Amino acid sequence: MKNLLLIIGILFSVPSLAQDIIAQDLIISDFVEGTLLTPNSKTNTLAIIIPGSGPTDRDGNQNFMKNNSLKFLAQDLSNKGISTFRYDKRALTMLKKGASEKQIKKVRFDDFITDAQKVVSYFTNKKRYDKIYIIGHSQGSLVGMLAATENVDGFISIAGPGKPIDHIILEQIGAMGANDLVESAKKTFEIMKTGKIDKNFNPGLANIFNLDVQPFIMNWISYSPTEEIAKLTIPTLIINGTNDIQVATTEAKLLKNAKEDSELVIIENMNHVFKMVGSKDTQENTKTYNMPQLKNIPELAEKIISFTKE
Image (tube, rainbow, N blue to C red; front, side, top):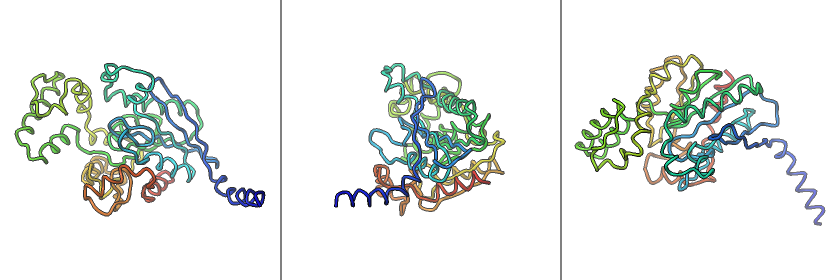
């Protein structure tokens, strides 16, 4: 009986094995480590997935936020014949290698661009793929735009802001009804735009303008997403979800307007971490940020696959 059950198990496992994808961990540089998924079927297309803000790993997770959004996206694409490479944010790699807090605080936005460019160069030099696409999520959208200027065949923005980060921060402060803090933040941003640190920022904004954080934000606000996407000469796909409570669909429309020949796709009921949710209710929406078994909305991968075949 045991042998019969073993044979039945093998027979029923064969189809899934045939659809398996090959996973390989790669070290691209001292700061970039990630996972390459390669379909069993022959492919000449690679998608490089760039994570969003914060200490986000290659799967789209953080310490207290596990949803596997980028992992599922990579798997969904690779299951349909597209190789994918996704990687950890620089700070995570540095922490794993024993970097000090002081060293990590020296990371700048430009370092993210450098990391993405090195990934592109790595695979370009391998001459394994005829087509290379960059997929940038949230903050990774702007990083991707800036890294997609050479040796990239297409760019895909998912939940990417259209406004510069200082505008977004001011809007978020204003949404709290703190007009005095908005004016204080404006003054600090103006100082930072001159290349100087504001040591006399409003204490009520310490979580934003901490002296250790200001150099990073100063670097970040020097880039405008609409200006950068307009410079791209490659096919571009802009995706946003109707139930994204972090990045509104109006941001995607700003990007679309800046690059008129781009394709805009608004996915109904998709939230910021690619899950299907019924509303923008904060509690219901953010609950999916910590549901690691919940798969992504299928339409996301479908739209990306269709775009790469055009």
